[in-house]
Length: 287
Length: 168
Image (cartoon, rainbow over all chains, first blue to last red):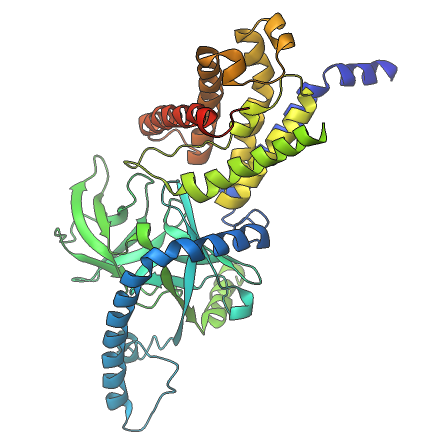
């Protein structure tokens, strides 16, 4: 026993190193296999507050272009709302704070009701393999996990963690996140993800050969993910080639949203998300 | 004694804040992302107990992880250089020099020594960090390019910082 303690003391530095390294590497590995970290996350109070304070100073310089963009967006939305109100004035009038997206309203099968709010970006990165965005709104503002995040009507990411005052968003520029996307012109869909190389381009995979693809085709959301309504712009096809030894195209998509310059984003809440998830989970465990 | 400990708390805070608020937002040509926060480990005194060094290194790494949503990645890399530092010092310095000076500073040890010392630490740290972050050997050469270029920039920034702020 005495010898054991002697040995432990003699090599205590190496033992401590191995112990700590095991702990940290376990953190890395568990994080990589499960999508969500619960504790180490920039939605925590400590870093959230710091980012919030700091960004409120630095973003002063970016406010003017944002205002202009928002004014333009407001005008477009007001026009759309106006048209909707005219359409729906015969009979079924809808509450002013909820909007049926035109595309979905037409489709009576998929009558999902989406609600929109906004939040300010307080931290954002594009230089890592797994990029995240931190927002200044949290649980007390009604933000929930799995809400879609957009900027100027273009897909940006998905809310993963929510704390009382802040939330983190897994960015489209995160090689761990996939979203289903389709070519707007012909409705063929594939899976969209980022290969971690260029922050302006993502890759559309699983698109079979027989699909006619052209440079400049618009790529939009499919509406299969229940976090995003159908038809939100993601980007345009900038390059495509036939992969060697595979049956699918390699399609490069130029992103519509400017990830380097995100200040204000929109949050989309699918009010029927719980119902959809409950129903889908029955398929997994039911039989 | 208390004053010197306070100084290291300050160096810790400044390194982390500079990294999180300034350098994490810098991406040059898609491949350059410098990590200068290991400045804290670089500047720790020669005679610091090895076990304490490991604990400080892990604390620094976890603090960074807290800000970058990368649980364990920075902690693991800083822990490695915390462990490697005494070995590196033994390799590039004689026992007499280590006894006659208490801290690794440009003023004490000379520019050439300091640059070598920083380069070795930075390269080990960046190599481990970038591969752990990518978590794959796909695109090996792109990651390698990122490591080489980012290391070069980090070394330049850390050495420069010695002439600008941390003079003593």
